[in-house]
Amino acid sequence: MSTRTVLESKSKTVTIGFDEPFCVIGERINPTGRKKLAAELEAGDFSTVEQDAVAQVAAGAGVLDVNSGAVFSGKMAEDPRYADNNFVEPMLMRELIEKVQAAADVPLCIDSSVPAALEAGLDAAHGRPLVNSVTGEDERMEQVLPLVKKYGVPVVAISNDDTGISEDPDVRFAVAKKIVERAADFGIPAHDIVVDPLVMPIGAMATAGNQVFALVRRLRDELGVNTTCGASNISFGLPNRHGINTAFLPMAYAMGMTSAIMNPLALPVGPKKIAEKKAEIEAAGVILPDDIDDEVFVQLFGLGSTKHRAGREMEAIRAANLLLNHDAHGTDWIAFNQAPVEGGGRGGRRGGRRGRRG
Image 1 (cartoon, rainbow, N blue to C red):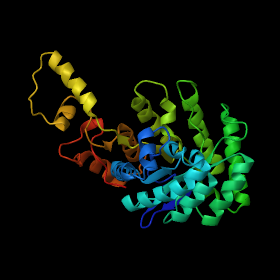
Image 2 (image 1 turned 30 degrees about the vertical axis):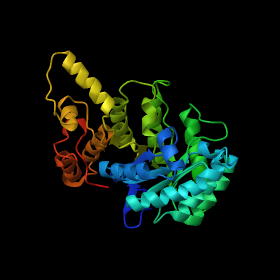
Image 3 (image 1 turned 90 degrees about the vertical axis):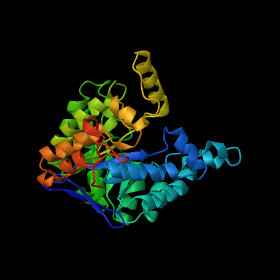
Image 4 (image 1 turned 180 degrees about the vertical axis):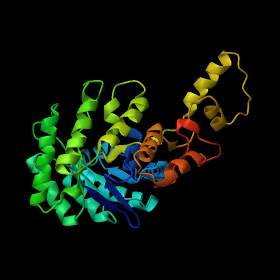
């Protein structure tokens, strides 16, 4: 069995499949929980969106998730409709899609709980984007699946329904099967469905890792579908989340997971953290040059980088691609470990090297 889900931008094609390199779907274009970004969008400022698009692709994302989940609180006094996602998201999604496509030529994942926003995104998108998402709720399937069929695009199917998210993996599998079967009624083939089996936090459920590994294998073997997940959910609430994520992703990949919605970036070290570290070092009696460059300083003391760069999770995925023979001749792994960090210097094992594949 060799299921292939084909995504396209204006000029690029990305294939999600069992015999393909792991597909990283960059998650950062999402105002949910990012107050600064939401405020920028309300003001019509898309500069952070454009920067995030470029940085994620440079770090190795092959697809960009575009989430329009915002309400515009500052405008509520003038017009209460701006407090309603159903009003804000359709117009915002169209703008986001247009800005992201202008900044980065990679396939998109159109992400909203508002059907009208999904359609606005589909209407604005070049190529063949991925729709995120449909659940097992009957009403949601009747709203989203006709759109998927109309535009001839693939869709993320999330394994929850009217009863919520079950802790029983058999129930989550049954929901996924229900969506696949209902999609078939609309003429949507299984290869155009990418199932999210739902990753539970390991800190709250000790069996969460084993559950998702078993689910992914069943989804592959029994339904023949590609899979994805919100990768960082596994480490929620625990220390050293990157350490957990970098173990989880290759393990899920080896069990058959073919993509993940995740942050491919190691976020820049900010001035506050730099100042704190300098104070700590000086308190220990170490004299630093007055003119030491911040980038040199943070790399010297293992803090990371002042620039956006590929995160540790990307290093783990590239290594897994190599080990699973999805990186012909190790080309991507070698390029990743030879490419200099923007601004000079080598990134080292802390994930500072950049990949060249979009």
